[in-house]
Image (cartoon, rainbow, N blue to C red; front, side, top):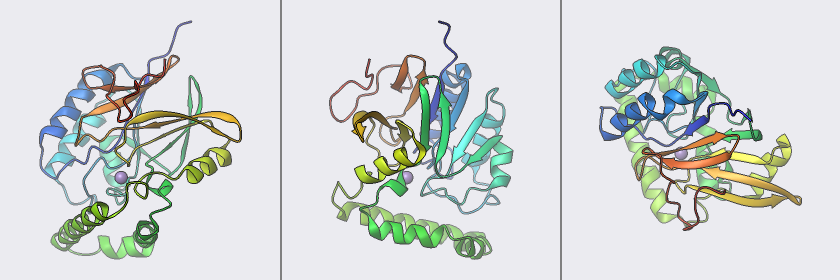
Amino acid sequence: MLSAPPVLVVSDLHLDREPGPTLSAFLRFLDGPARGASSLYILGDLFEYWVGDDAGFAAAEQLADALSSLPMPVTFQHGNRDFLLGRAYADRAGMELAPEVLPVELEIGGALFMHGDSLCTADTEYLRFRKVVRHPDWQQAFLARPLDERIAEAERMRGVSRGAGRMKASEIMDVHPDAVAAVLRGHERALLIHGHTHRPAIHHFQVDGQPCVRCVLPSWDELPGYLSVDAGGPRLLTLDGRNYPVESGLPADPA
Ligand code: MN
């Protein structure tokens, strides 16, 4: 059977304001493996923070040029760091803006794409914060502030989030199995693809006796990589096309 080109999925690049090594790696990826893809999905935290589409950060502008020149559709989902990325920038970059839970039809069946932060339901402190900053009133007020104030606030929140992360138990910072089961059940899907936790792996488990798969994308701060899905199944790969080394020591390729 002739298989369609793969769907590629990335997240958690955490690009800084100024161009750096991760932007260079991503531009090489866009000019390399991504050229052969049928579509590209960016599941959030593309940027370390986002303070408004008017900020004009050099790395973001350079990336918009590269993304908008791609031949295939590009879809962006917000992460917990770049949740303020808006339609103006998405249009410049030629990206579709996706909702928090995005059903996608893949060759291997229906999947759900998410950033993943909303699945970390044991982190009640973060979920409270999330509720505040995702409110349209808060966002409108924030975006109305002068750019230098917004940047200062984003830098401050980044510091707070890093400090909090170090204090929390490792299980609290991971997705909760009940939240994973609930979202799969709710959408009648058996495949979940997400980022956020920086724990790249392909997990096999059951929900209500049904076999399910959860693919976790890598963080580019550690080792850049992506998920490639075609008729052969999902594979986690490094930028040079090798199997991505996963934490558990199990091969990233389930086949
Ligand atoms: Mn995240």
